[in-house]
Amino acid sequence: MTPEGGRIEWIAVRPQRRQPPLVVRSVLAIANRGFEGDRASVRSGKPRQVSLIQAEHLPMIAQQLDLPPIDPALLRRNLVVSGTDLLALRFARFRIGEALFETTGLCDPCSRMEEALGEGGFEAMRDRGGITARVLVGGLIRVGDALVPEPVVRLVRRGLG
Image 1 (tube, rainbow, N blue to C red):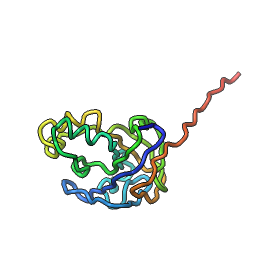
Image 2: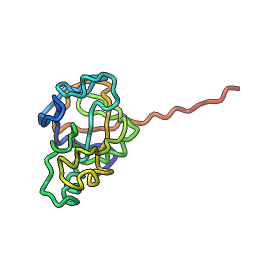
Image 3: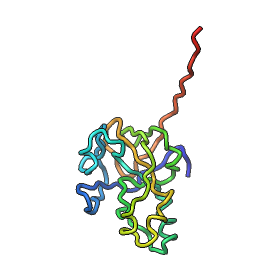
Image 4: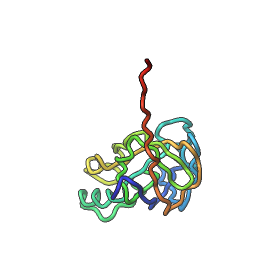
């Protein structure tokens, strides 16, 4: 697992609150909105437009709860990404397919994890909830696409005088 990039393993949109997600092979990311067909996309400009979780964390969560492999649909995230440390993207921009994203924060677990995973679900998700992101440039995303961090540009401030 590297901070350099990863691969999209799973995509879902949630058309309605408290409804199961629709698992899809591709989705259109819409700038400043989120994913087409996802309920979060109706809240234009909100910082939490898309959520991502590391594929490598799913077996850890299942093991901690003594469960069989976990269906990502239970975790209420939009993307499952393998091969990268999502926390390394915490203050970064990254590309997936044709779209450009900017990380907006951590995707901390909520009390609904107890409903989805059973007792201890919230605790098992702590520090493994992934990240949230905003869509800066829209475009098509597909399962199998690479997640590629954008190069960091550092500005040097010059003194006057």
